[in-house]
Image (cartoon, rainbow, N blue to C red; front, top):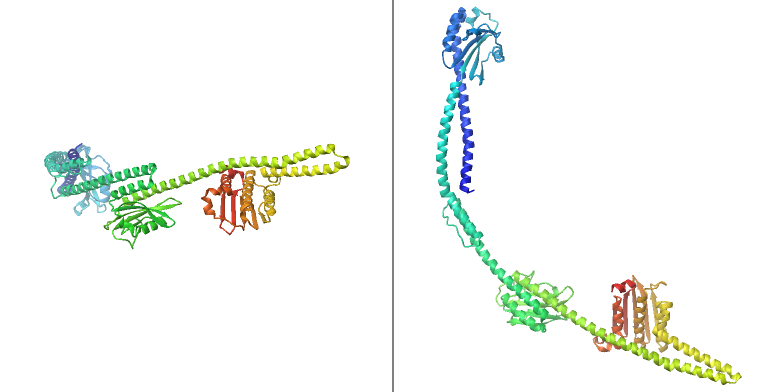
Amino acid sequence: MRLHLKITLWIVVIFLGVGGMSIYSLLLFQRTAGLQQFEAMAHTLTETILHSLTTTMVNNNPTEMREIIRHIERDPMIERVAIYAPDSRVWASSDPAEVGSVQPSALLAQVIATGTARTEERPALKELVVFTPIRNQEECQSCHTAGPRILGATVVSLGTEHVESHLRNSARLLTGLVGFTFLLALGTLSILLGRFVLDPLSDIVGTVREVSRGNYGARSAVQTSDELGMLATAFNDMSGRIERFTRAQSEQIEDLTRRLSTLTIFSQSLTEAADLRGALTEAAGVFREIVRADTCAIYRLEDGASTLIAGAGETSLVETQGAEIVVRAATTGQALSYPGGPAEVCLRAAPSGAGLAVPIRTKDRTFGGIIVARAEAIPFEEADLTLFMTVAGHLATALENLRLFQVVRDKERLRGELLSRLIRAHEEERFRIARELHDQVSQSLTGLMMSLNAIEDADPSQVHGALDASRKVTEGTLEDVRKIIFDLRPTLLDDLGLIPAVRHYAKTMLEAQGVEVRFHVSGFGGQRVAPAVETTVFRVAQEAITNVARHARARVAGIAVVLDEGMVRLQVADDGVGFDAAQLRGSPDRRHLGIAGMEERVALLGGTLEIASTPGHGTTVTMIVPASAAAKEAA
């Protein structure tokens, strides 16, 4: 529904409501005023009747009284005239049939009792009845005593039909006049409303629709100085701001799209790049163009010193203090900017121009930083900070992946070396066992066989000596077999546990070479740990003790095995010649000391292994592993 029709309907409804109430109120007022006039006229007429009838009533002439009453009744407005005695008996009336009859009335009783005139309207009979008391005056006391104050009442009934007819005619006239006035006013208002309100409003609505369709250049043509003109002016200003904001948003979206595309290409380049330095150099040039900087430089941080690994533009802007700013950003883990925002930390003592530096770091490792700079002191924006924080995150992830890949590659190489060493150790162990069986057991068995053959041909007096020699050969052979079995799997480890096995091996290997062994045990209390843990601890202790015996040239060796809070701690320390542990870790010679094998065994249990040694100051091997087999399974 159009606004014009809505407003017209509302005006009609309001007019009908207000006009109807006004006409009704006016008619009600007129009716009330007419009845009041009737009442006043009735009172006047009653007084006149009483005055006219005073002489007649004094003379007690009923005939003359009836004539007077009939004469009064001839007035078209008067319906009935009657005089009542205090006992409600009709003393005189315009209707002769009523005379002498008793007609009780509550209103009549009130008038006689109070001496006050009362009026009663009877709409059904269309009459107004006025009761007026007849007071006991001096001239009345000739017939009546002076005792009663009221002698009766005069009743006059006035017809209200002509009043109602007059009110109906007035209502018709008033309704017609008001209706004509309303139609005239409504037509005039409709024309004025359309010309000065609705037409300008339609123009503004059309402009709003154009703006909603995307035509932000649409403007309203309303040029008045009233409220509609002010509305049109305000809307034109608003549409202008929307147009400028939309244009700025479009430019910003294009810039963000370009930045996102650059980030996507940068991430893909980092993933696929064979030459990381070349990819970073190319990316630095793109970043410099996106943020409209004069230079972009990427630094690598190693041992507190920064190294330029990629750059684009005028790198001379950051050659003097750029490295220091990058080091500070990388150390604190916060972005830096100068001379103002957008970073939280702004440099006060900053170079000329403007700059923004962000750290390249992961949660646990710092790699370096990126810095962009401008020759002019035009600060960078928040979007530039977001871009470089994202770039730094991608680059940190790529560098971390590269480092982890290198670590994995080194571990794979070590695993290959360990496997090769394990296979070679197996072959050497087989060869050693075969050699010992051949050189010792086989020769001893051959000697034993020859001794037994000699006993068969020996003189009985020499049999005892031959058997004694055979027994010694047998005991030596048995000892050799036990030694071989202990090297393969020490029975003490299975029978008595970890502590006796380590103590026995240390005393056997070291005290035979004159090395003093200081053994310390704590926390076990006779209990044993998981078999896999016992085997690993023993093998690591065996390897460390063997290295002391072969390479350390030590005088004292301390061995400590401690069980504390579910962890087994083994430490083998000597005061021997020592070695450069850091250099040995990166050298292929580390396999000669069995370091890779010990590390592999400890890693399988989820433990740690540390080797501390310096030339001339001995060596300390410390291993910590969980004491439960579940730890091994979790690892």
